[in-house]
Length: 156
Image (cartoon, rainbow, N blue to C red; front, side, top):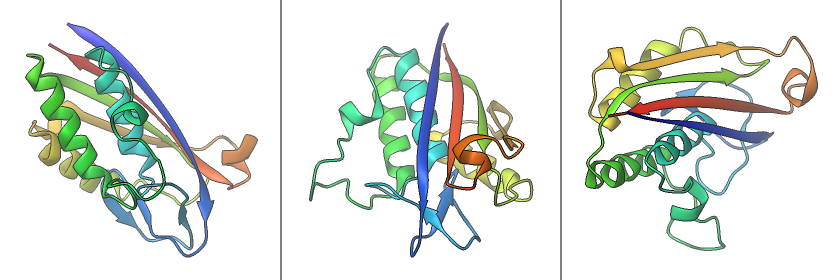
């Protein structure tokens, strides 16, 4: 058994769609990033990669100008991460993810996120835990400047 931790942050940006956990969330702003900026998937990828001692998402999918990862759907990155860890002989036992966002409210989106991530990773939905919280108006999340996400992944 191996455990990994992931953390990611993206700031809000106008004229972008908001993608979290592979699901489009209805909100007035999206997140700024080289890819679709799905902060939850990025944290999850880092947790899974870390558990398998495969470095981090930026190492495998760099954000250099004009490369193949510009505006890429983060679900594609997650699928590739799962291929990498399976090539090393690991399987996901479970993951536990937390999205930190003052806005928008996310509770109604969580079941769809769980279903989406489970499908992309090829695991049962019971292996994917997602929670959402605020920071009680503290820090950049509390000021609605962006969203952070944390994830823990257990591999066997």
